[in-house]
Image (cartoon, rainbow, N blue to C red; front, side, top):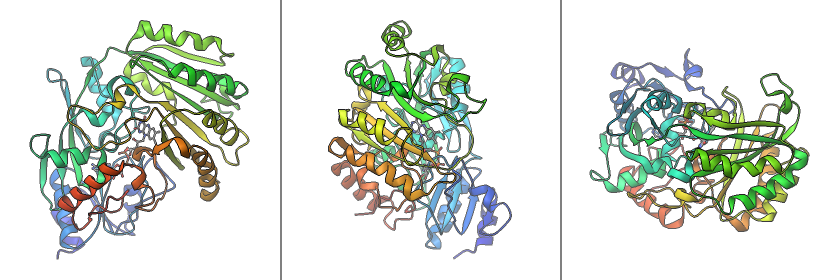
Length: 452
Ligand SMILES: Cc1cc2nc3c(=O)[nH]c(=O)nc-3n(C[C@H](O)[C@H](O)[C@H](O)COP(=O)(O)OP(=O)(O)OC[C@H]3O[C@@H](n4cnc5c(N)ncnc54)[C@H](O)[C@@H]3O)c2cc1C
């Protein structure tokens, strides 16, 4: 058994014990309402630091949890070792191979900054400040998701430290089972130190958003439902609704209003503009942000906050979009809801429905929509937020296939949601593989796949 002080000698990065200066800063991240409270935090500089931390945890019977940006903090650790990866943020793009090798602490914006000038982009999501590894290992639903599928489908290789302390380079050839499990099973199988991913040849997109007053919500929702029923795979869209505070950071027409926001992205610029055109006539458009965008401008499509804050949220993957969903969004998630609710209804289908050439553990590919509900937590009671969201999810139960691992936020129990995140066969196989790769459940402070 090595002591905590000996652990500090073994790693090159900083080590913080509970109560020490720097501990709170090291565990903090994008989510400000929920934090891990481990015995010790290792600020890893490289894969060897990760190995030392995992070996130390193994020798001392401790749990290991990992954090990059803290966007997805969900199940909280109150013991063991937290490995933070934010210092491991290297990004290397190989133009010829059309791949990127990305360190565990890198964010999507860092990848796009390097890849877009070479005509290549990743299947990244709505915000460039999200971490690459957490996003990808849980599926990764991108701005161009219907065209290219999940980001997990484009992973070629994973460098990961498993519970035995080994650093493995895992590919479809080297270890097919572990490669399958990591892409969907996220943090249950080890600490990923870097990913090699394929990039897409994309020269900008046509996209952006149209904003309507909530008074027109029925028209907008009904049109979204009929319009998305028959679209080419090249166009990915979503609908959001929320109240905009009366602050100058927001475009003037949106300030102080409850808004419905429809967003689009496509690589087919000509057809995209034609397909989106009818949206301008269905109701008065308060703010028009549509046009050709570089991929790095993709964050303007959703216009999400880029500063740390407190929030809670979850999602349901739906087999279809029933009329009941539209009513629930209007009545239960609108301006008269007991707490402010941010709605994000994304159209799925297209390439998201297809297994990649090397299948992975991402579940519920048949889903046609995902409904995410999110609420800010400042000054609000978590129980009221959850019961408001749950009322909406209950209405949608008959059409619910499962939930997305990427969109489950807030302090949750390790087994509270996990069996709704995978279909039955996938979950059973993940549990069998967990018994092989992490039999003592070292990686347990997560949506936990218990060893079978
Ligand atoms: C503003 C915002 C926008 C978003 N947009 C999208 C979107 O468009 N599409 C989408 O799919 N998701 C989206 N998400 C969800 C996001 O992908 C998840 O929250 C994801 O978990 C964030 O990963 P992270 O590394 O940034 O966060 P972290 O909180 O640091 O990590 C999240 C999880 O990933 C695991 N993890 C992180 N690093 C590693 C590692 N090295 N090895 C093993 N496990 C690791 C952690 O254990 C943790 O459980 C968004 C989230 C926010 C807050």
